[in-house]
Length: 194
Image (cartoon, rainbow, N blue to C red; front, top):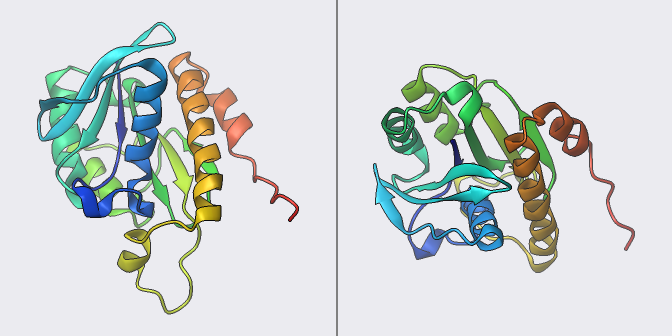
């Protein structure tokens, strides 16, 4: 069984913000594979289902971003998941271009407070993650204001493509092809001609 956790903030004001792209990918997976993410466990919305023959639990922590580890750590323990091979975390990254993916098997939090909290609760930084670029913060912008802001119409279209790529990457990772997914999706996306 695999836990696939998308990071974000609960409640309406945060919907569609840069910080909630993890939730958006969980929604895309839930839609495609007909999984209802409406159960509640360990301060998270969860949905159990099958993706390409693999049992999964889709997770949207409801603890707010900076305490994501409290929810995910408890779920890993409860479902007896091996975090190094059966946990996948999806979240936003301000160092990547809008819609760009970066897949990793381990690594530091890179300044992301949600990931920092997960590492603290799991006691390891070895777990699969898909980072989705939300674009670099403009100069003089407060980082919190930027990640809690919304995408432009043009950015949202690029993000929708990014979400579909993330869904494809998830299926590859579930099939044990994390390296192939990294080779496929960690390349820089060429900007489209205007």
